[in-house]
Structure formats: C-alpha cells, structure tokens
Image (cartoon, rainbow, N blue to C red; front, side, top):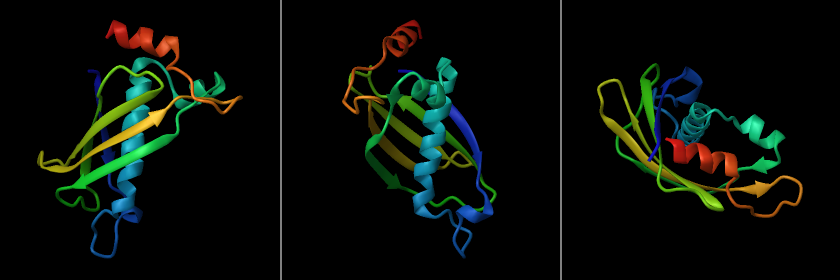
Amino acid sequence: MKNTLTHIRVRYGETDQMGVVYYGNYAQYLEQGRTEWLRELGFSYKWMEANNVHLPVIHLSIDYKQPAFYDDLLTVKTTLKQMPNVKIEFQYEIYNESKQLLITATTILVFVNSTTKKLMKAPDYLIKKLNEE
C-alpha cells in the first residue's frame, strides 16, 4: 500500500533533561507522517475539514525500541495498511540517521461528517486517488 517518508529534526524542547525525546512527542511525529502522506495524495487536513470531513484518532499504539536524541534527523515511514472504509489505519516506523529502528506504531482514525458528527465512509475522492496509485 502507499507509503511516505517524512524527515523531522528533533528540537531541543522535545527532549527531557537527558536529551532524549519525550515519549509523548512521538504521537506528533506520527501526525506529521500522516499529514505528509495525505499531502502527497494531493489533499490536506485543512482541505478535508473545509469539505466536511474530520479524522479523529481512535487508537494509537507505539512500541519503543531505541531512544531518539536532540538534533537527530528522523525518518518517519507512514504506510496505509489497507483500503479505508469508515476507518483508515496506518503503520509507522521511525528511524534515525544511522537507520536504526526507533519505534513501530499504528493508528486508526475514523471519517466523521463535520456537520452531523456521525461516522461516514471514506470520501470518494480519496478512494479514487488510492486506486490510481
């Protein structure tokens, strides 16, 4: 399935006193990976929200393998697990510059109609674009 590579430089404020990335910041790195994955398809969260679609996260799982440190250049590999329906599921791997695997993760998001606040199927424009890939 479609995957994207996103590069992120660890900022000082994302680390603890030991210079290690605080574990909660990985969720933001995953979000950046998803945002770039979507952008590479030609869409953005902002555009989707303007078109009545929200994508809340309903599940997040992270397995920590090795720490990342201040000023590391990280690569977030974001992969779609399967064609979306009312939910969309991603797998992630984050590597450092030495190609060491730092974390693996999964997220599940659901498509929600912004007006009704009800679940909806994945928008046709997204399915169409994924079928072209």
